[in-house]
Image (cartoon, rainbow, N blue to C red; front, side, top):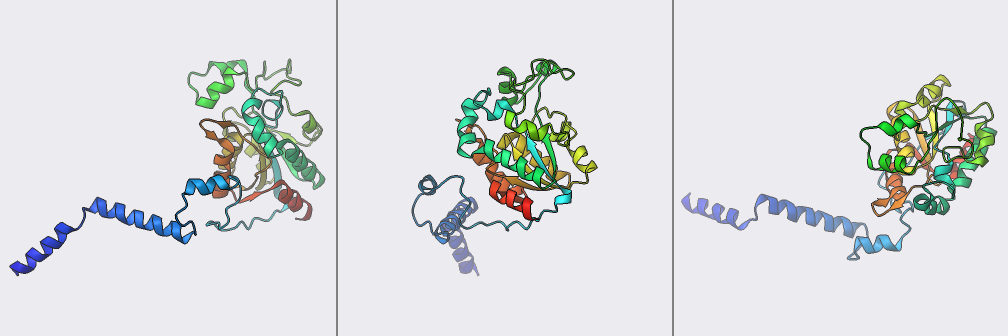
Length: 282
């Protein structure tokens, strides 16, 4: 018995400590996963550099969407279709312009407006406005600080339109015929990113809407925040991935961050072509 005890102790002493065993196991699993995916020994970063960073994965791990539109209970929702985000004259063009151009965002949003109106869908826009009293906030996130500093979406008052026409807070001129047709819901302004502080959800519910086609600006900020809130309040949401865009900064590519989360959370992620086709045949 004593000899047996010594043998067991020797075996135990020869094994790595538990944390080391876990590290070894994780390393082995990671190597196996890489090999199984066909990556071999090529570094992952090098592979990513060779591919379109926005391309759909060749072998998705998540289940495919089965979202089907019922047009009577579907709305097109566009976040921040405003000059400051979408025009070279806007204050953010220096950081969002490349993404807006790359994804043909302005034209694609216009195509969604045209298709939705043609199909008789409910259409809503959720704008972003700042009034002088909003400048008195005592704390802000990084982007809030920047938006206030550059005068983004600024309006002189919620009660008059002085200086509003064709300002950065105004809607893109090509969208105005759709927005000002007397039928489009213009929600009260959201103040940070999501629609929790405006009446968008109330308006949609009052129109018996429970499916949303979502697009607009900016992908990883207001558009993604609207996605979160709409999902949490029981809507089925499809995001149109090329009818949005985002800033590219040293801190990261906002569009890529949003696209990843759209794939994880949305009920569907469509191109403009796909969304238009579904509005026409559903």
